[in-house]
Length: 416
Image 1: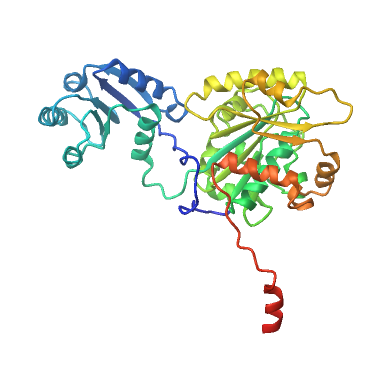
Image 2: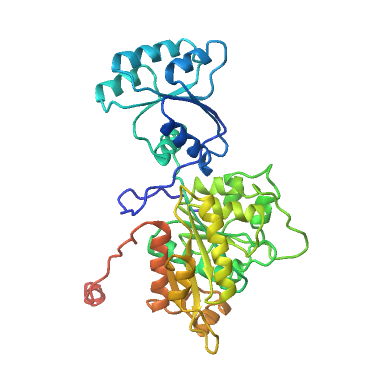
């Protein structure tokens, strides 16, 4: 596996992903209903699913009373609208009952640097100024527990078809290829179609091991094992292939892939999940918790119905994440009645993120040869569409490559 840090000089369109919080307990003591509502909403976010949250009212005085006879949780959140002096007195009273290791986050109304320094000197972990948004609060907590992690937090990109045969695997593979090539960043494709996955075929690879070993050996799963299971396709692109056999039944739990994704997040900037057309607990979880989710559809009525159903479900589950995007594939297939792009977008109440024309010769030839579209026709319109989709999926501007002047080869010969 290629271990690579994010390039801080690369221009970004979106903030880096927020690392999930560990399994901790958090109790908040609010003074206002607005903040209590914000914290309750944050508690339902996917990044805090392992965090036990309890929101109380009463502010700092209520916290002092609560912990006179009870142990303190991992994190205490205090909302205080008091003056600087009164706030410091409240925190001093609370400090008498705080257990060792408890982190205290204060949310106040004074945007005051001297106050901030005084709070840090008193071992307050973080000070936030009202109004505080859901993601701002989660990011602050995440930083408390992940600031010493050396590896970057990889961006997970999930891709699934809204019906069989719409080409979601093909799009996932070409998208990952473009991310690795255009952004010059390490990328891993995870083939989750255990019985019928095509990643190995599409990249002309036949790895003896793959994702099955990672999923069915959770006691042995670590970064070293994942590194051994990856099959390298290029300097920046690796695949975690599916066994593609029906010798066993792949009945998996909802969290079966969580440990694997967590390991990949810590070592690889971009992880592309090729999710088969199934609706299981684990598939729904991966589509709901990915940093970016793409639904692939064809211009047909069944696709429109299924895409609408998926979007409605995932929008509700991803309230604090980007809305899922739709890719329309196979537009203009000869003799097939199709829903127009405009009507398809109106039915979903969004514009497709990308539209790929039907090209059986190009895609069929690439598939049969174990190649990507850009390898068959580099610089063609179809390859450019995947490059644009890669930029959208990652939120990054493609790395500009230095082009050689047309006289450089001749000058090299003369110098020789």
